[in-house]
View 1 (cartoon, rainbow, N blue to C red):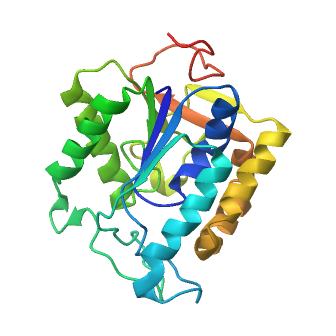
View 2: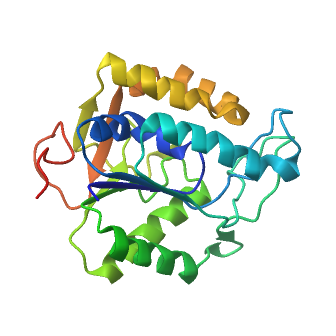
Length: 240
């Protein structure tokens, strides 16, 4: 596989890497997505009951995955946690966090290690060490992916979502972009369609569009261990 995205929640795949997934599939590259939870702790917006939200978001994600042209897709049922600032009316989930920090969850690391052995990705996209916004599930997913890659011993390019500039409250742990991708209009329009499938999370989608509109058409990443000039592609076109 050429590119694997590993994220905790439905919709995490589309904001930062949706265009890249679409474009790489169009180029004939093999793409994949692993989503660790069903997002049952998100907002319902009255579209379903809190108890139904996990299954509802799973179907939303499946529709988005079709538009993103993802070749390999799997969604798991690990517990989804609340963000740092819970919104009234959200469902409730236990998540990856514990009172003492992030739980070890060796079963998640083992799952990812197994998928690395089977899929053999050349590159992985996931969250940065600070989880972009310090959401405990984002931070934990970063840790799980790093541990799995280290245990695998594989040479994998590990890319993190990297905002061009951090918000003041998220400066700590921010990593600057090393790779910047400008999406063509046809890819951007498909990405927006994929975002629109996440109807239950419409407030999050609109908030992203309002606050980070330039990042709709520009996707930025930090390559772990890279110390060179900014690049404008993640992979070679030809398979190595």
